[in-house]
Image (cartoon, rainbow, N blue to C red; front, side, top):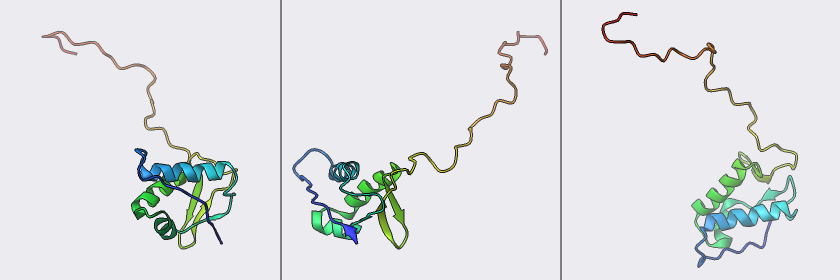
Length: 116
């Protein structure tokens, strides 16, 4: 069963709709209204209930997934992430460059007419 929240979106506000939804969901998660493991409403239900576009709902959910607050499970739905789930990537990021020669390169400019 999915959790139904009393969400309100103010379409007259200068704050983007997706961000209003993102903040409302984040607040519900942080306050314990949405508990870890609870299933979130389907995107199509949120679209119909809030009378916003699917892109608006998708963007808000994408941001919360990226922040580690929500977890998408293909063909099963979107769930509130476990409270002990790390926001960090699952694999360590490899270093972009490895300095195999710790000495700085020769920065001198050769004089004209001299050969190195």
